Length: 113
Length: 123
Image (cartoon, rainbow over all chains, first blue to last red; front, side):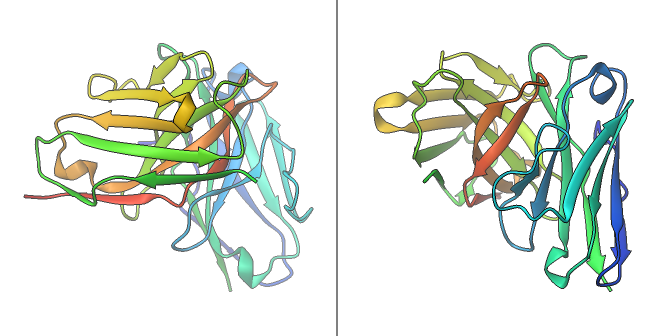
């Protein structure tokens, strides 16, 4: 069981907008810790997509955006493209355990119809 | 240009100790704020953070695995080594090393990843 909860799958047609939720608790997202998002294309290593809740690294298209509110965060993808088909993971920090404890969501598989 | 590369055995037997090496370039672990982490991913499953070492040689481990893990660094060689004892088939996974940054929101994140190395635990 992942500390952060994501839907197992989402889908959308090309050009549409999809969102992926990431639900935490008062010991992680709700405690004010940042949320980060990763994209993992099939057979490849994860890639940083969003850091610090809503910041895009250089080279990430502005079709990808992140937000955070309360104990949850969301990743939005607009203008969906076939190349966006991948697994997406959220990640944060949890203070309920001793020391800095990085936590991931269970991942969401995005299917482009 | 930041790159990381994992190396180690592809196959280990149950109860053996796994030793993985992360060799990196494009940054120095002696620079304040720099960290390197190990993360693993069992086939078809989610990512799991294992351990982190920072520029000041502070080390942090996953609570569930800390009795089995040791992380260390060799700054002169630009390498970080992870050892995991008492390997079990459930430890079969792709193991990644990643450069780790500390954001303003008090949260680590992984901005550069290695390609990963698949480790299978089987007799």
